Image (cartoon, rainbow, N blue to C red; front, side, top):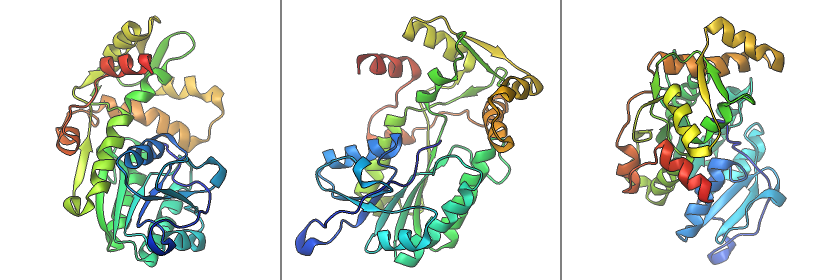
Length: 300
């Protein structure tokens, strides 16, 4: 679930007296945060875009870029002064991501932020199979311990990532067995987040499990990808040992390979299964399944 949580830029204020918007959105130069910022702008919602590089901040009506960084407590606190509601996208995957998350949460509390809406992961717990899900759970607990009002969006695996799992030979490899997942479109997550941010008081203390409409296996995903892309795609179940061996040539650090492999073993263990109604509850529309997602992507 790697969407950068910070970007750049400091802007002039908006509204009466030049005050900055009280809603802050992180990750607007990334995929999910950018979608959320655009949905909010389309609804006429003023927002403060916390960014590392002002030149990269999206140019949106009612949006003011302000320089911030998760790992810089002084800068983060300054950028959050006057913010009532904060949309916190999980930072890019890194070995020290949890430390930077904690620093940013603490800065938000020190700045007087009232409500944090955090993008977590489906089934996050202290001992979940997906290793990065444990970091998400620890971040949730840090937000609660800081005394902040909170809403947790626990996103299932992104449908958007499924085409990227395919190797150059058209094969998806991983130790997922016959396990299934209720994968969800990033666009549906963005619509859910925007709905919460437009009226956060209605969602204080809530945790939403955001999924697609159905459970699918990687075998079924390969079939749908073949139908939707015109490329022949198949799934090959690996053993855990084979999975580590096939990823060794990338030269990635151990924590990252553990994360890659545990994505599949979490599916095999049934930890990403179980569609919910939460997307419909928040948005009033049914979430996209993989077939419809591929049709929409094809027409973009």
